[in-house]
Image (tube, rainbow, N blue to C red):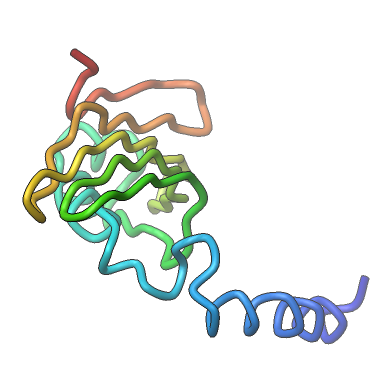
Length: 120
């Protein structure tokens, strides 16, 4: 598939999703995306494994359930570093508009697992 065709397909699929907020991509401020990344990209073991600088994708996949000021979110965020890429697995609970994390786990391409916050 040509690069131009990939961009065109991405725009056709991505723009409606972002405009409608589907999948939590556009309105990500409602989700723990940024807070989870902030905790992981500066974690020493993550930096050693993936290579500095570590950055996270703007987009993520996962599920959320919300009710009033409370929510539960499980998401996966792609990470990239100078040595290798990885995926951040997040499990979080929001109570009174404050997110708490029960899982922040980085899985590197080489199979190494780093528990920044382990499951309880």
